[in-house]
Structure formats: C-alpha cells, structure tokens
Image (cartoon, rainbow, N blue to C red):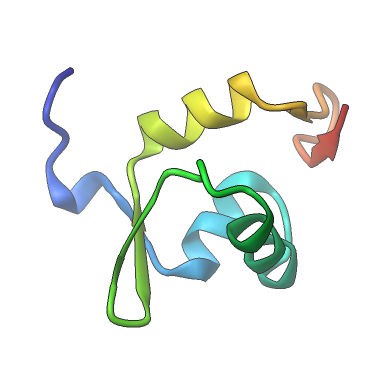
Length: 74
C-alpha cells in the first residue's frame, strides 16, 4: 500500500462527514455502529485516509447517489 502524506488525509469529523456527504451526527453514528470504519483517532480528532474511506464505502452497503452525491444506505 502506498503511503499517503498526512496533508492529504481528512482531518476532523466535519471534513470526513463532508467527504461522505452526511451530517456530523450521522458520521458519529457510523463511528459507533461500524467498528471497521477507517478512522485513526488522536485525542478528540479523527484522521481518515481518503483511499481508506473510499474502500470502506465501496465494501459497505452504503453507496453514493450517482445524481446528487449524497451517501445513502443500499
């Protein structure tokens, strides 16, 4: 696996939620509900690799709407 510079990672719940197309409260629910969510935590901040997040979404029953880009359960 290729190393991704930390500057390219998504930092914080708001950035990760925006990348998924969900609210921060939905992201918090994902973090509790899915132990395989690809988040690295340091203190109260989460760090997520964009490639890891894309792979996680692809392997879950959570898909993006092709029209509007919103993340929806499949």
